[in-house]
Image (cartoon, rainbow, N blue to C red; front, side, top):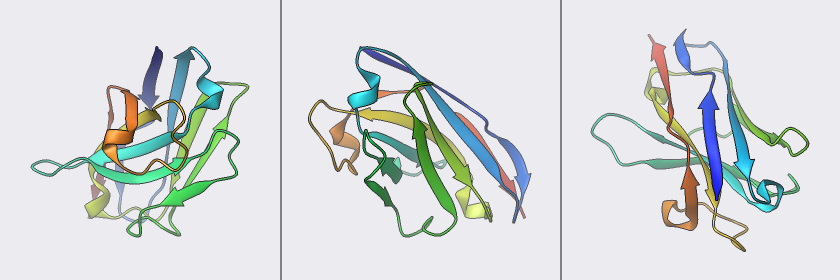
Amino acid sequence: QVQLVESGGGLVQAGGSLRLSCAASGRTYSTYTMGWFRQAPGKEREFVTAIGWRGGWRYYADSVKGRFTVSRDNAKNTVYLQMNSLKPEDTAVYYCGAARDGVVAATERSEYAYWGQGTQVTVSS
C-alpha cells in the first residue's frame, strides 16, 4: 500500500505560481512512476504530468507544457508540481497518483493504483 497526501493548493491570480507537494508513505514508493492529474467541475479527471522513479522520464500534457514542472525527491518521499503562468482554465482539484507496479510511462488514469485526496487550485482572472 502507498498513502499519498497532497498540499500546496490555493487561490492565485492569473499569471501567478503555486507549488504542489505530494508526500508518500508505504512500501517502495521510490520505485513507482508518479503522476499528477486534475479534475475541473463537470469534467473528467485528466492527465497533467508524470515522472519516472529515477526522475529521468517526464511527460507533460500539451496544455501545461512549458508552464508546469514535475520533480521528485525520493529521499523525502515527495513529488512536486511547480505551476507557473497559471491560467483560469487551470482551476481544478489536483490529484497525485502512484502508478501500478511495473508501469513506467503512465499517462492514463487506469494505470494508477493509488491516489491522494486532492488539493484545490483556483486561478482568478
